[in-house]
Amino acid sequence: MTLLDTRPAPDAASAPTPWWDGAVVYQVYLRSFRDGDGDGIGDLRGLLSGLADIAELGCDAIWLNPCYASPQADHGYDIADYRRIDPAYGTLDDFDDVVAEAHRLGIRVLMDMVANHCSREHPWFHAALAAGPGSAERGRFHFAPGTGDRGQLPPNNWRSVFGGSAWTRVTEADGQPGEWYLHSFDPAQPDLNWRNAEVADDFRGVMRFWFDRGVDGFRIDVAHGHVKAPGLPDWPGADDGSGGHNGAMWDQPEVHGIYRDWRAIGDAYTPPKYFVGEVWVPSPTRLADYLRPDELHQAFCFELLVQPWDAGRLRAAITTGLALSDRAPAWTLSNHDVHRTVTRYGQEQVLGPVDPSDMISAARRTGPVDLAIGARRAAAAAALLLALPGTVYLYQGEELGLPEVFDLPPDARQDPIWIRSGGTQLGRDGCRVPLPWDRERSDFGFGSGTTPAWLPQPEWLGAYARAAQHGDPRSMLSLYRSLTRLRRGHFDAGAPLLWMDVDADGVLAFVRGRTLCVVNAGKTAFRVPADWAVGALVIATASSPAGTVACDSTAWYDLTSPERNR
Ligand code: GLC
Ligand code: MG
Image 1 (cartoon, rainbow, N blue to C red):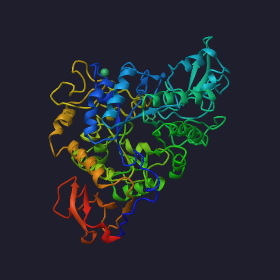
Image 2 (image 1 turned 30 degrees about the vertical axis):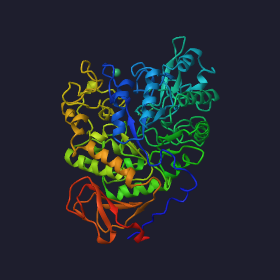
Image 3 (image 1 turned 90 degrees about the vertical axis):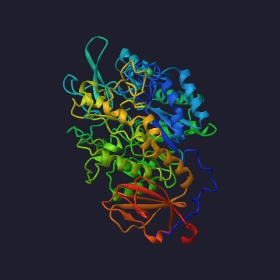
Image 4 (image 1 turned 45 degrees about the horizontal axis):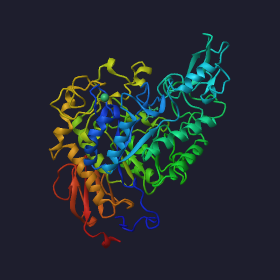
Protein backbone atom coordinates (compact mmCIF):
# COMPACT_ATOMS: atom_id res chain seq x y z
CA MET A 1 0.00 0.00 0.00
CA THR A 2 1.00 3.61 -0.40
CA LEU A 3 2.42 5.20 2.71
CA LEU A 4 0.25 7.79 4.32
CA ASP A 5 1.58 11.27 4.53
CA THR A 6 -0.14 13.57 6.95
CA ARG A 7 2.43 16.33 6.77
CA PRO A 8 1.05 19.68 5.66
CA ALA A 9 1.71 20.78 2.10
CA PRO A 10 5.23 22.27 1.86
CA ASP A 11 4.26 25.93 1.69
CA ALA A 12 1.31 25.70 4.08
CA ALA A 13 3.26 27.22 6.93
CA SER A 14 4.47 30.24 5.00
CA ALA A 15 1.43 31.25 2.90
CA PRO A 16 -2.01 31.57 4.49
CA THR A 17 -4.62 29.39 2.77
CA PRO A 18 -6.61 31.55 0.36
CA TRP A 19 -10.40 31.36 0.75
CA TRP A 20 -10.88 29.46 -2.52
CA ASP A 21 -8.56 26.60 -1.55
CA GLY A 22 -10.96 23.90 -0.36
CA ALA A 23 -14.02 25.96 -1.24
CA VAL A 24 -17.24 24.81 -2.89
CA VAL A 25 -18.58 27.24 -5.49
CA TYR A 26 -22.18 27.09 -6.69
CA GLN A 27 -22.70 28.13 -10.31
CA VAL A 28 -25.83 30.22 -10.74
CA TYR A 29 -27.29 30.27 -14.24
CA LEU A 30 -29.39 33.25 -13.24
CA ARG A 31 -31.95 32.98 -16.02
CA SER A 32 -32.96 29.55 -14.73
CA PHE A 33 -32.35 29.76 -11.00
CA ARG A 34 -35.44 31.55 -9.69
CA ASP A 35 -37.81 34.20 -11.03
CA GLY A 36 -38.56 36.94 -8.51
CA ASP A 37 -40.81 39.20 -10.61
CA GLY A 38 -43.03 36.66 -12.35
CA ASP A 39 -41.96 37.27 -15.97
CA GLY A 40 -40.78 33.69 -16.49
CA ILE A 41 -37.09 34.63 -16.44
CA GLY A 42 -34.82 34.03 -13.47
CA ASP A 43 -33.47 37.24 -11.94
CA LEU A 44 -31.53 38.84 -9.09
CA ARG A 45 -34.51 39.09 -6.71
CA GLY A 46 -35.10 35.41 -7.31
CA LEU A 47 -31.48 34.70 -6.50
CA LEU A 48 -31.72 36.85 -3.39
CA SER A 49 -34.56 34.65 -2.15
CA GLY A 50 -32.54 31.51 -2.85
CA LEU A 51 -29.23 32.53 -1.30
CA ALA A 52 -30.14 30.91 2.00
CA ASP A 53 -30.60 27.60 0.18
CA ILE A 54 -27.14 27.96 -1.35
CA ALA A 55 -25.68 28.69 2.07
CA GLU A 56 -27.54 25.72 3.51
CA LEU A 57 -26.07 23.55 0.78
CA GLY A 58 -22.69 24.41 2.29
CA CYS A 59 -21.31 26.56 -0.50
CA ASP A 60 -18.63 29.20 0.04
CA ALA A 61 -19.18 31.22 -3.11
CA ILE A 62 -21.38 31.68 -6.15
CA TRP A 63 -20.31 32.17 -9.75
CA LEU A 64 -22.94 34.16 -11.57
CA ASN A 65 -23.23 33.62 -15.32
CA PRO A 66 -23.32 36.98 -17.13
CA CYS A 67 -26.11 39.29 -15.99
CA TYR A 68 -25.00 42.48 -17.77
CA ALA A 69 -27.17 44.35 -20.28
CA SER A 70 -27.48 42.03 -23.25
CA PRO A 71 -29.81 41.26 -26.17
CA GLN A 72 -29.53 37.62 -24.97
CA ALA A 73 -28.54 36.12 -28.31
CA ASP A 74 -26.32 33.77 -26.31
CA HIS A 75 -28.08 34.39 -22.99
CA GLY A 76 -25.80 37.05 -21.63
CA TYR A 77 -22.56 36.04 -23.34
CA ASP A 78 -23.29 38.87 -25.78
CA ILE A 79 -22.88 42.03 -23.73
CA ALA A 80 -24.05 45.46 -24.83
CA ASP A 81 -23.09 47.34 -21.66
CA TYR A 82 -20.58 45.91 -19.19
CA ARG A 83 -21.48 48.37 -16.47
CA ARG A 84 -25.23 47.73 -16.34
CA ILE A 85 -27.46 44.87 -15.23
CA ASP A 86 -29.85 43.54 -17.84
CA PRO A 87 -33.35 44.87 -17.05
CA ALA A 88 -34.74 41.32 -17.23
CA TYR A 89 -32.45 40.43 -14.33
CA GLY A 90 -32.97 43.59 -12.26
CA THR A 91 -31.02 46.71 -11.39
CA LEU A 92 -27.65 47.63 -9.96
CA ASP A 93 -29.42 48.07 -6.61
CA ASP A 94 -30.67 44.49 -6.81
CA PHE A 95 -27.14 43.40 -7.61
CA ASP A 96 -25.78 45.28 -4.59
CA ASP A 97 -28.45 43.61 -2.43
CA VAL A 98 -27.37 40.19 -3.67
CA VAL A 99 -23.71 40.92 -2.91
CA ALA A 100 -24.55 42.28 0.54
CA GLU A 101 -26.79 39.35 1.47
CA ALA A 102 -24.32 36.81 0.07
CA HIS A 103 -21.51 38.34 2.09
CA ARG A 104 -23.70 38.37 5.18
CA LEU A 105 -24.19 34.62 4.69
CA GLY A 106 -20.43 34.11 4.21
CA ILE A 107 -20.76 33.55 0.46
CA ARG A 108 -18.32 35.23 -1.97
CA VAL A 109 -19.55 36.46 -5.34
CA LEU A 110 -17.79 35.77 -8.63
CA MET A 111 -18.95 37.28 -11.91
CA ASP A 112 -18.32 36.17 -15.47
CA MET A 113 -15.90 38.26 -17.55
CA VAL A 114 -16.77 37.95 -21.23
CA ALA A 115 -14.08 39.92 -23.03
CA ASN A 116 -13.30 37.87 -26.13
CA HIS A 117 -16.37 39.37 -27.73
CA CYS A 118 -19.19 41.78 -26.98
CA SER A 119 -22.65 42.17 -28.50
CA ARG A 120 -23.52 43.48 -31.92
CA GLU A 121 -25.59 46.00 -29.93
CA HIS A 122 -22.56 47.34 -28.03
CA PRO A 123 -22.10 51.07 -28.81
CA TRP A 124 -18.60 50.30 -30.12
CA PHE A 125 -20.00 47.98 -32.76
CA HIS A 126 -22.61 50.53 -33.84
CA ALA A 127 -19.85 53.11 -34.10
CA ALA A 128 -17.70 50.70 -36.11
CA LEU A 129 -20.48 50.10 -38.61
CA ALA A 130 -21.14 53.81 -38.98
CA ALA A 131 -17.49 54.85 -39.27
CA GLY A 132 -16.62 52.53 -42.16
CA PRO A 133 -13.54 50.67 -43.37
CA GLY A 134 -10.13 51.73 -42.06
CA SER A 135 -11.57 53.74 -39.15
CA ALA A 136 -10.31 53.72 -35.57
CA GLU A 137 -13.79 52.49 -34.58
CA ARG A 138 -13.39 49.35 -36.71
CA GLY A 139 -9.95 48.86 -35.17
CA ARG A 140 -11.56 47.72 -31.94
CA PHE A 141 -12.84 44.65 -33.76
CA HIS A 142 -11.52 42.37 -36.49
CA PHE A 143 -12.90 43.83 -39.70
CA ALA A 144 -11.37 42.74 -43.00
CA PRO A 145 -12.19 42.85 -46.69
CA GLY A 146 -13.48 39.62 -48.19
CA THR A 147 -11.67 37.41 -50.64
CA GLY A 148 -12.85 36.29 -54.07
CA ASP A 149 -13.07 38.67 -57.01
CA ARG A 150 -15.81 40.75 -55.41
CA GLY A 151 -14.96 40.23 -51.75
CA GLN A 152 -17.88 37.83 -51.57
CA LEU A 153 -15.90 35.19 -49.67
CA PRO A 154 -14.82 35.41 -46.00
CA PRO A 155 -11.32 36.76 -45.25
CA ASN A 156 -10.12 33.35 -44.03
CA ASN A 157 -11.31 29.80 -43.42
CA TRP A 158 -11.94 29.98 -39.67
CA ARG A 159 -15.04 28.26 -38.30
CA SER A 160 -17.37 29.54 -35.60
CA VAL A 161 -17.57 27.38 -32.46
CA PHE A 162 -21.34 27.43 -32.96
CA GLY A 163 -21.11 26.23 -36.58
CA GLY A 164 -20.58 27.89 -39.96
CA SER A 165 -18.01 30.50 -40.92
CA ALA A 166 -16.51 32.71 -38.21
CA TRP A 167 -17.12 35.73 -40.45
CA THR A 168 -20.19 37.78 -41.33
CA ARG A 169 -20.34 40.46 -44.00
CA VAL A 170 -21.76 43.88 -43.20
CA THR A 171 -23.71 46.31 -45.32
CA GLU A 172 -21.86 49.62 -45.53
CA ALA A 173 -23.47 53.05 -45.16
CA ASP A 174 -23.90 53.30 -48.94
CA GLY A 175 -26.07 50.18 -48.91
CA GLN A 176 -23.42 48.00 -50.59
CA PRO A 177 -22.03 44.76 -49.17
CA GLY A 178 -18.76 45.64 -47.49
CA GLU A 179 -16.23 44.31 -45.01
CA TRP A 180 -16.52 41.19 -42.91
CA TYR A 181 -16.17 40.93 -39.13
CA LEU A 182 -14.87 38.04 -37.08
CA HIS A 183 -17.04 36.20 -34.54
CA SER A 184 -15.62 33.10 -32.90
CA PHE A 185 -19.16 32.31 -31.75
CA ASP A 186 -22.49 33.70 -33.01
CA PRO A 187 -22.65 36.62 -35.47
CA ALA A 188 -24.32 38.48 -32.58
CA GLN A 189 -20.96 38.25 -30.73
CA PRO A 190 -18.28 40.21 -32.65
CA ASP A 191 -14.75 39.44 -31.41
CA LEU A 192 -12.88 42.34 -29.86
CA ASN A 193 -9.37 43.18 -31.01
CA TRP A 194 -7.18 42.76 -27.95
CA ARG A 195 -4.19 44.26 -29.74
CA ASN A 196 -6.06 47.57 -29.52
CA ALA A 197 -5.01 49.57 -26.44
CA GLU A 198 -8.44 51.16 -26.02
CA VAL A 199 -10.08 47.74 -25.65
CA ALA A 200 -7.60 46.67 -22.98
CA ASP A 201 -8.01 49.95 -21.16
CA ASP A 202 -11.79 49.85 -21.06
CA PHE A 203 -11.81 46.35 -19.56
CA ARG A 204 -9.51 47.52 -16.78
CA GLY A 205 -12.23 49.99 -15.91
CA VAL A 206 -14.97 47.33 -16.12
CA MET A 207 -13.06 45.10 -13.77
CA ARG A 208 -12.54 47.84 -11.19
CA PHE A 209 -16.19 48.88 -11.51
CA TRP A 210 -17.36 45.48 -10.23
CA PHE A 211 -14.51 44.97 -7.77
CA ASP A 212 -15.38 48.31 -6.20
CA ARG A 213 -18.98 47.06 -5.76
CA GLY A 214 -17.69 44.14 -3.71
CA VAL A 215 -17.36 41.40 -6.33
CA ASP A 216 -14.73 38.90 -5.14
CA GLY A 217 -13.44 37.66 -8.46
CA PHE A 218 -14.16 36.63 -12.02
CA ARG A 219 -14.56 33.50 -14.06
CA ILE A 220 -12.99 34.36 -17.40
CA ASP A 221 -14.94 33.27 -20.45
CA VAL A 222 -12.94 31.65 -23.29
CA ALA A 223 -9.71 32.82 -21.70
CA HIS A 224 -7.71 31.14 -24.47
CA GLY A 225 -9.46 33.24 -27.10
CA HIS A 226 -8.76 36.92 -26.63
CA VAL A 227 -5.82 37.32 -29.04
CA LYS A 228 -5.66 36.06 -32.65
CA ALA A 229 -2.54 35.23 -34.69
CA PRO A 230 -1.18 38.29 -36.53
CA GLY A 231 -2.59 38.56 -40.04
CA LEU A 232 -5.41 36.12 -39.25
CA PRO A 233 -3.95 33.34 -41.43
CA ASP A 234 -5.93 30.39 -42.78
CA TRP A 235 -5.75 27.33 -40.59
CA PRO A 236 -5.04 24.06 -42.36
CA GLY A 237 -7.80 21.68 -41.42
CA ALA A 238 -10.45 24.29 -40.76
CA ASP A 239 -11.98 23.85 -44.20
CA ASP A 240 -13.71 20.55 -43.61
CA GLY A 241 -15.90 22.20 -40.97
CA SER A 242 -15.02 19.56 -38.41
CA GLY A 243 -14.02 22.27 -35.94
CA GLY A 244 -10.94 21.26 -33.99
CA HIS A 245 -8.30 23.38 -32.33
CA ASN A 246 -7.42 26.22 -34.65
CA GLY A 247 -3.92 27.24 -33.62
CA ALA A 248 -4.21 30.68 -35.22
CA MET A 249 -7.49 31.49 -33.51
CA TRP A 250 -6.82 30.27 -29.97
CA ASP A 251 -4.14 30.27 -27.28
CA GLN A 252 -1.81 32.94 -28.63
CA PRO A 253 1.21 33.84 -26.45
CA GLU A 254 -0.02 37.42 -26.05
CA VAL A 255 -3.11 36.40 -24.03
CA HIS A 256 -0.89 35.95 -21.03
CA GLY A 257 -0.14 39.67 -20.91
CA ILE A 258 -3.86 40.30 -20.35
CA TYR A 259 -3.95 38.02 -17.32
CA ARG A 260 -0.81 39.51 -15.83
CA ASP A 261 -2.47 42.89 -16.17
CA TRP A 262 -5.76 41.74 -14.59
CA ARG A 263 -3.96 39.90 -11.82
CA ALA A 264 -2.13 43.09 -10.88
CA ILE A 265 -5.47 44.92 -10.73
CA GLY A 266 -6.98 42.22 -8.52
CA ASP A 267 -3.92 41.97 -6.29
CA ALA A 268 -4.15 45.65 -5.46
CA TYR A 269 -7.31 44.93 -3.42
CA THR A 270 -7.37 43.57 0.14
CA PRO A 271 -8.10 40.71 0.19
CA PRO A 272 -6.89 40.09 -3.36
CA LYS A 273 -9.48 39.33 -6.01
CA TYR A 274 -9.59 35.87 -7.57
CA PHE A 275 -9.59 34.65 -11.19
CA VAL A 276 -10.53 31.27 -12.64
CA GLY A 277 -10.25 30.70 -16.37
CA GLU A 278 -12.31 28.76 -18.84
CA VAL A 279 -9.41 27.54 -20.95
CA TRP A 280 -9.81 24.87 -23.62
CA VAL A 281 -6.38 23.94 -24.96
CA PRO A 282 -5.31 20.62 -26.40
CA SER A 283 -2.60 19.86 -23.86
CA PRO A 284 -2.12 20.24 -20.10
CA THR A 285 1.22 22.00 -20.58
CA ARG A 286 -0.51 24.78 -22.51
CA LEU A 287 -3.02 25.06 -19.69
CA ALA A 288 -0.23 25.33 -17.11
CA ASP A 289 0.96 28.56 -18.74
CA TYR A 290 -2.25 30.29 -17.62
CA LEU A 291 -1.47 29.35 -14.02
CA ARG A 292 1.91 31.02 -13.68
CA PRO A 293 2.16 32.84 -10.35
CA ASP A 294 1.34 36.24 -11.82
CA GLU A 295 -1.58 35.06 -14.02
CA LEU A 296 -4.81 33.23 -13.13
CA HIS A 297 -5.24 31.56 -9.74
CA GLN A 298 -6.98 28.60 -11.33
CA ALA A 299 -8.30 27.21 -14.60
CA PHE A 300 -11.01 24.56 -14.75
CA CYS A 301 -9.66 21.05 -15.09
CA PHE A 302 -12.09 19.98 -17.85
CA GLU A 303 -10.05 16.84 -18.24
CA LEU A 304 -12.12 15.33 -15.43
CA LEU A 305 -15.48 16.56 -16.71
CA VAL A 306 -15.10 14.92 -20.13
CA GLN A 307 -14.23 11.43 -18.84
CA PRO A 308 -16.56 8.45 -18.95
CA TRP A 309 -17.47 6.61 -15.75
CA ASP A 310 -14.32 4.56 -15.61
CA ALA A 311 -11.92 4.33 -12.67
CA GLY A 312 -8.73 4.39 -14.73
CA ARG A 313 -9.85 7.36 -16.77
CA LEU A 314 -11.04 9.31 -13.75
CA ARG A 315 -7.80 8.62 -11.88
CA ALA A 316 -5.68 9.70 -14.86
CA ALA A 317 -7.67 12.94 -15.17
CA ILE A 318 -7.25 13.72 -11.49
CA THR A 319 -3.51 13.07 -11.78
CA THR A 320 -3.38 15.49 -14.71
CA GLY A 321 -5.22 18.15 -12.73
CA LEU A 322 -2.96 17.72 -9.72
CA ALA A 323 0.14 17.96 -11.87
CA LEU A 324 -1.10 21.31 -13.15
CA SER A 325 -1.65 22.87 -9.78
CA ASP A 326 -0.51 20.45 -7.14
CA ARG A 327 -2.22 22.19 -4.32
CA ALA A 328 -5.55 23.47 -5.54
CA PRO A 329 -7.02 22.67 -8.95
CA ALA A 330 -10.51 23.87 -9.92
CA TRP A 331 -12.72 20.83 -10.51
CA THR A 332 -16.14 20.52 -11.98
CA LEU A 333 -18.27 17.79 -13.49
CA SER A 334 -20.94 19.97 -14.97
CA ASN A 335 -21.79 23.46 -16.17
CA HIS A 336 -24.20 25.36 -18.44
CA ASP A 337 -22.42 24.10 -21.59
CA VAL A 338 -22.59 20.32 -21.12
CA HIS A 339 -25.14 17.61 -20.49
CA ARG A 340 -25.95 16.85 -16.88
CA THR A 341 -24.04 14.15 -15.02
CA VAL A 342 -27.07 11.92 -14.32
CA THR A 343 -27.63 11.70 -18.06
CA ARG A 344 -23.99 11.36 -19.08
CA TYR A 345 -23.21 8.59 -16.61
CA GLY A 346 -26.51 6.87 -17.39
CA GLN A 347 -25.62 6.50 -21.06
CA GLU A 348 -23.47 3.82 -22.58
CA GLN A 349 -19.93 4.81 -21.53
CA VAL A 350 -17.68 5.56 -24.47
CA LEU A 351 -14.21 4.41 -23.53
CA GLY A 352 -12.52 5.54 -26.72
CA PRO A 353 -10.18 8.53 -26.48
CA VAL A 354 -11.50 12.06 -26.00
CA ASP A 355 -10.65 14.25 -29.01
CA PRO A 356 -8.16 16.75 -27.53
CA SER A 357 -9.17 19.40 -30.05
CA ASP A 358 -12.89 19.10 -29.24
CA MET A 359 -13.06 17.82 -25.68
CA ILE A 360 -16.48 19.27 -24.94
CA SER A 361 -18.30 17.06 -27.45
CA ALA A 362 -17.57 14.08 -25.20
CA ALA A 363 -19.86 15.68 -22.63
CA ARG A 364 -22.72 16.38 -25.05
CA ARG A 365 -23.57 12.94 -26.36
CA THR A 366 -27.10 11.86 -27.01
CA GLY A 367 -28.46 8.32 -26.80
CA PRO A 368 -30.53 6.18 -24.44
CA VAL A 369 -30.20 6.89 -20.72
CA ASP A 370 -30.69 4.59 -17.75
CA LEU A 371 -31.71 7.19 -15.19
CA ALA A 372 -31.37 4.88 -12.18
CA ILE A 373 -27.78 3.96 -13.00
CA GLY A 374 -27.04 7.55 -13.99
CA ALA A 375 -28.32 8.90 -10.67
CA ARG A 376 -26.36 6.32 -8.71
CA ARG A 377 -23.13 7.13 -10.54
CA ALA A 378 -23.74 10.88 -10.36
CA ALA A 379 -24.02 10.55 -6.58
CA ALA A 380 -20.80 8.55 -6.47
CA ALA A 381 -19.11 11.11 -8.72
CA ALA A 382 -20.23 13.95 -6.44
CA ALA A 383 -18.61 12.18 -3.49
CA LEU A 384 -15.43 11.78 -5.52
CA LEU A 385 -15.49 15.44 -6.55
CA LEU A 386 -16.05 16.70 -3.03
CA ALA A 387 -13.13 14.67 -1.69
CA LEU A 388 -10.63 16.33 -4.04
CA PRO A 389 -8.19 19.03 -2.97
CA GLY A 390 -8.72 22.51 -4.35
CA THR A 391 -11.94 24.15 -5.44
CA VAL A 392 -15.12 22.32 -6.43
CA TYR A 393 -17.63 23.98 -8.75
CA LEU A 394 -21.22 22.69 -8.62
CA TYR A 395 -23.63 23.62 -11.38
CA GLN A 396 -27.12 24.52 -10.18
CA GLY A 397 -29.54 21.60 -10.30
CA GLU A 398 -26.84 18.97 -9.93
CA GLU A 399 -27.65 18.90 -6.22
CA LEU A 400 -31.22 17.98 -7.21
CA GLY A 401 -30.01 15.17 -9.46
CA LEU A 402 -31.66 16.71 -12.51
CA PRO A 403 -31.26 14.79 -15.75
CA GLU A 404 -30.64 16.59 -19.03
CA VAL A 405 -33.94 17.59 -20.64
CA PHE A 406 -33.77 16.01 -24.08
CA ASP A 407 -37.50 16.24 -24.78
CA LEU A 408 -37.80 20.01 -25.30
CA PRO A 409 -40.14 20.98 -28.13
CA PRO A 410 -37.95 22.03 -31.11
CA ASP A 411 -39.63 25.43 -31.37
CA ALA A 412 -38.82 26.15 -27.72
CA ARG A 413 -35.09 25.65 -28.12
CA GLN A 414 -33.03 28.85 -28.04
CA ASP A 415 -29.36 27.89 -28.03
CA PRO A 416 -27.47 29.41 -30.99
CA ILE A 417 -25.82 26.00 -31.40
CA TRP A 418 -29.24 24.47 -32.14
CA ILE A 419 -30.09 27.32 -34.49
CA ARG A 420 -26.76 27.48 -36.38
CA SER A 421 -26.52 23.72 -36.76
CA GLY A 422 -29.97 23.67 -38.34
CA GLY A 423 -31.22 21.46 -35.53
CA THR A 424 -28.59 18.77 -36.04
CA GLN A 425 -27.05 19.51 -32.62
CA LEU A 426 -29.32 19.83 -29.61
CA GLY A 427 -27.05 22.37 -27.98
CA ARG A 428 -27.28 23.38 -24.34
CA ASP A 429 -30.89 24.24 -23.56
CA GLY A 430 -31.42 20.88 -21.86
CA CYS A 431 -29.19 21.73 -18.90
CA ARG A 432 -30.69 25.23 -18.61
CA VAL A 433 -34.31 24.37 -17.91
CA PRO A 434 -35.59 26.49 -14.99
CA LEU A 435 -35.13 24.80 -11.62
CA PRO A 436 -38.01 23.08 -9.82
CA TRP A 437 -38.52 24.41 -6.29
CA ASP A 438 -41.95 23.14 -5.31
CA ARG A 439 -43.69 20.28 -7.07
CA GLU A 440 -47.19 21.48 -6.15
CA ARG A 441 -46.96 24.74 -8.07
CA SER A 442 -47.67 25.09 -11.79
CA ASP A 443 -44.15 26.21 -12.73
CA PHE A 444 -42.75 24.12 -9.89
CA GLY A 445 -42.21 27.28 -7.86
CA PHE A 446 -39.69 28.77 -10.29
CA GLY A 447 -41.68 32.01 -10.58
CA SER A 448 -45.14 33.27 -9.84
CA GLY A 449 -46.84 30.51 -11.80
CA THR A 450 -48.69 32.97 -14.01
CA THR A 451 -46.15 33.38 -16.84
CA PRO A 452 -44.62 30.19 -18.24
CA ALA A 453 -40.91 29.72 -17.65
CA TRP A 454 -38.66 30.85 -20.54
CA LEU A 455 -37.88 27.23 -21.39
CA PRO A 456 -40.69 24.74 -20.88
CA GLN A 457 -40.33 22.49 -17.85
CA PRO A 458 -41.33 18.90 -18.58
CA GLU A 459 -43.99 17.31 -16.35
CA TRP A 460 -41.50 14.93 -14.79
CA LEU A 461 -39.31 17.78 -13.50
CA GLY A 462 -41.59 18.26 -10.48
CA ALA A 463 -40.39 15.00 -8.97
CA TYR A 464 -36.99 16.66 -8.47
CA ALA A 465 -38.31 19.76 -6.66
CA ARG A 466 -36.08 21.13 -3.93
CA ALA A 467 -38.84 21.26 -1.32
CA ALA A 468 -39.66 17.59 -1.86
CA GLN A 469 -36.02 16.59 -1.41
CA HIS A 470 -35.47 18.78 1.60
CA GLY A 471 -36.83 16.52 4.27
CA ASP A 472 -35.89 13.25 2.58
CA PRO A 473 -32.63 11.89 4.00
CA ARG A 474 -32.24 9.66 0.94
CA SER A 475 -32.49 12.47 -1.63
CA MET A 476 -29.67 13.78 -3.80
CA LEU A 477 -30.03 17.15 -2.05
CA SER A 478 -29.51 15.58 1.38
CA LEU A 479 -26.47 13.73 0.06
CA TYR A 480 -24.92 16.93 -1.29
CA ARG A 481 -25.56 18.74 2.00
CA SER A 482 -23.84 15.96 3.91
CA LEU A 483 -20.93 15.84 1.49
CA THR A 484 -20.16 19.55 1.65
CA ARG A 485 -20.36 19.55 5.45
CA LEU A 486 -18.21 16.44 5.78
CA ARG A 487 -15.71 17.75 3.20
CA ARG A 488 -15.00 20.59 5.59
CA GLY A 489 -14.46 18.36 8.57
CA HIS A 490 -12.65 15.47 6.94
CA PHE A 491 -10.52 16.77 4.09
CA ASP A 492 -8.46 19.71 5.27
CA ALA A 493 -7.69 22.27 2.59
CA GLY A 494 -4.13 21.74 1.54
CA ALA A 495 -3.98 18.06 2.59
CA PRO A 496 -2.26 16.32 -0.34
CA LEU A 497 -3.92 13.48 -2.23
CA LEU A 498 -2.13 10.13 -2.03
CA TRP A 499 -3.26 7.24 -4.20
CA MET A 500 -3.76 3.80 -2.71
CA ASP A 501 -2.60 0.81 -4.71
CA VAL A 502 -5.80 -1.06 -5.49
CA ASP A 503 -5.85 -4.65 -6.56
CA ALA A 504 -9.33 -4.60 -8.08
CA ASP A 505 -10.75 -3.60 -11.44
CA GLY A 506 -12.80 -0.46 -11.58
CA VAL A 507 -11.82 0.91 -8.17
CA LEU A 508 -9.87 4.02 -7.29
CA ALA A 509 -8.93 5.06 -3.79
CA PHE A 510 -6.97 7.86 -2.20
CA VAL A 511 -6.20 9.32 1.17
CA ARG A 512 -6.27 12.97 2.11
CA GLY A 513 -5.27 13.79 5.66
CA ARG A 514 -7.15 11.42 7.93
CA THR A 515 -9.79 10.32 5.43
CA LEU A 516 -9.89 7.64 2.75
CA CYS A 517 -12.08 7.98 -0.36
CA VAL A 518 -12.95 4.79 -2.27
CA VAL A 519 -14.80 4.96 -5.60
CA ASN A 520 -16.11 1.73 -7.02
CA ALA A 521 -16.91 2.15 -10.71
CA GLY A 522 -16.53 -1.59 -11.23
CA LYS A 523 -19.02 -4.37 -11.65
CA THR A 524 -18.75 -6.08 -8.26
CA ALA A 525 -18.69 -4.95 -4.65
CA PHE A 526 -15.26 -4.01 -3.32
CA ARG A 527 -13.99 -5.27 0.02
CA VAL A 528 -11.74 -2.70 1.70
CA PRO A 529 -8.45 -4.48 2.49
CA ALA A 530 -7.81 -5.05 6.19
CA ASP A 531 -4.35 -3.47 6.04
CA TRP A 532 -5.81 -0.12 4.99
CA ALA A 533 -6.57 0.38 8.68
CA VAL A 534 -9.91 2.06 8.14
CA GLY A 535 -12.13 3.01 11.03
CA ALA A 536 -15.66 4.35 10.91
CA LEU A 537 -17.53 4.87 7.68
CA VAL A 538 -18.00 8.60 7.22
CA ILE A 539 -20.52 8.43 4.38
CA ALA A 540 -21.42 6.12 1.51
CA THR A 541 -23.50 6.97 -1.54
CA ALA A 542 -25.11 3.50 -1.56
CA SER A 543 -25.66 1.07 1.28
CA SER A 544 -23.48 -1.98 1.45
CA PRO A 545 -22.39 -4.56 4.08
CA ALA A 546 -19.75 -3.26 6.52
CA GLY A 547 -16.27 -3.00 5.04
CA THR A 548 -17.49 -3.14 1.44
CA VAL A 549 -18.19 -0.50 -1.19
CA ALA A 550 -21.10 -1.31 -3.52
CA CYS A 551 -20.58 -1.00 -7.25
CA ASP A 552 -21.27 2.46 -8.69
CA SER A 553 -20.82 4.06 -5.30
CA THR A 554 -18.30 6.04 -3.25
CA ALA A 555 -17.47 5.69 0.44
CA TRP A 556 -15.40 7.84 2.77
CA TYR A 557 -13.73 6.26 5.81
CA ASP A 558 -11.93 7.68 8.78
CA LEU A 559 -8.48 6.23 9.16
CA THR A 560 -8.10 4.92 12.67
CA SER A 561 -4.55 6.03 13.24
CA PRO A 562 -2.83 7.60 10.30
CA GLU A 563 0.36 8.10 12.35
CA ARG A 564 0.86 4.36 12.42
CA ASN A 565 1.39 4.37 8.70
CA ARG A 566 3.95 7.10 8.48
C1 GLC B 1 -18.14 30.07 -23.06
C2 GLC B 1 -19.42 29.97 -22.27
C3 GLC B 1 -20.53 29.63 -23.22
C4 GLC B 1 -20.65 30.74 -24.25
C5 GLC B 1 -19.31 30.96 -24.96
C6 GLC B 1 -19.31 32.25 -25.72
O1 GLC B 1 -17.76 28.85 -23.59
O2 GLC B 1 -19.29 29.06 -21.23
O3 GLC B 1 -21.75 29.45 -22.56
O4 GLC B 1 -21.62 30.41 -25.19
O5 GLC B 1 -18.26 31.04 -24.05
O6 GLC B 1 -19.28 33.34 -24.86
MG1 MG C 1 -37.94 37.54 -13.72
